Image (cartoon, one colour):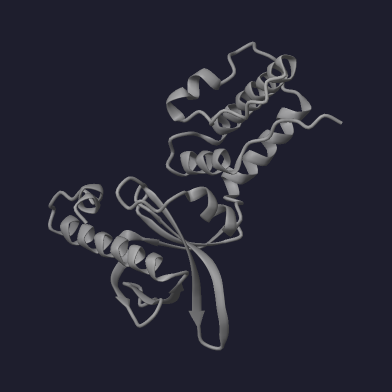
Length: 224
């Protein structure tokens, strides 16, 4: 049986972020998936006909969305497309990406050029073994989230951040205004440094917003 083209982890995570930031609706994400799947099928057929071993092209970002959306009166959706679309719809609605995929597809943690940052952390609590989680810091929607197996466990708006305290080793304490305290261990010291830096920038942003002063976190990170 011939293998049908499927979306990469990069493509699925990108689609979820587009929907999360309201840049795309779920239906638009599904339509993008259908069009992208069809494009990949055509590329594979052309490569097979030409015996061209070239690999898959990089996925198309949002500015090419319209060129990939199916036009009215276009082709019927095949079974393969419907399966892909169903998976993507579930992913973008439930953010069902594994912890490992969240980290792998997030790329390098360049603090100067990203809006969404994913960190692998170990959440500490009394009488429990530290639990591995993904901490996601999203400057687009101003939310700090804890994610496990693609499910969002907690959401803390940036405005609720009170303080961050780096302890010995990889230990970090994060305090929120609802009296919640989050104790965690970073995956490594480099991640700990980046995480604390980002949280400090969020604190500065909160102070400026309270005073009604403009603040650009990207510019602040450029100077760091």
